[in-house]
Length: 340
Image 1 (tube, helix red, strand yellow):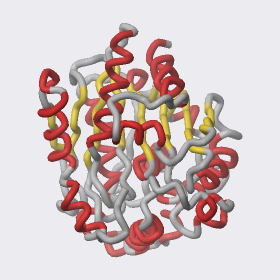
Image 2 (cartoon, helix red, strand yellow):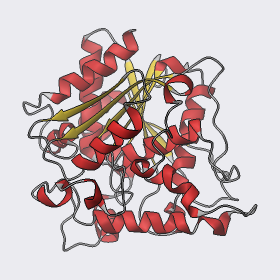
Image 3 (cartoon, one colour):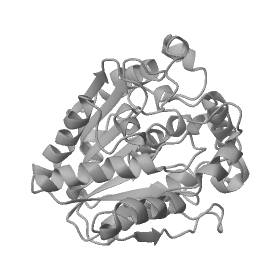
């Protein structure tokens, strides 16, 4: 992740945009796949925010699709290792006779009003709405997100069961009557920004988990500050920033906040964490208090010896899992959802 000596805007420019990363990967590694890039509609607050894009891995016309929200602390764009991981997964499923496409959401990140909350939630909502509009059945869609992308996934699920209180910024999303999304996978989700030590000691004691960016606290504070400024864009008044906390910090939501997820939004949930990652404690509290008591088909997998985003991190230096036992379990969980 980011070296301490380089501030996030410098690293962001060094890494490049999500579109740049996608083109570099596709041209270098998978030229036979081609490149499919789609620009999402933009109608939030008269044009506030940068446009998001769907970057496709596999054929857009495939019946089954994963909508993936990449991590990066709301500071860095999607990177090559994420494309490599999902393409590896796609090929593994293809060998089993299962054709799956992955639609990667490239959304605005970094400091500044064009990347301020809730633009990411708006674009995640637009992306899911778009997939439904082009003919994908809800039961043929699974959501996935890692780290900050896992946070964005919690935002979207929150919005589905508790519509965002400022519809001019994020309009309600309604699935077709009687339908649910097939699954939601959260890989090392970042569910608490403020005071991460309150959930346990892992944020400090797992300091050797360098895969968690050293500036995580600062990135979280910036995102929370953007949330507190939301009344600037609230024309109706009467809204307090505390009402927005459950959308941004899932671990701080009321315990029953997600109680209707199974009935109204998603069939199955899988949350993963590394035993040795800094975010371990907050992920465990989130699952045990907010998800497990209410969802009928939800699982938490904690990987012994695992660090943050472990199954994806392998692909920073390799083209396949490096003996990671969690990877085949996650891939089989997704495949099982699409088969049933």
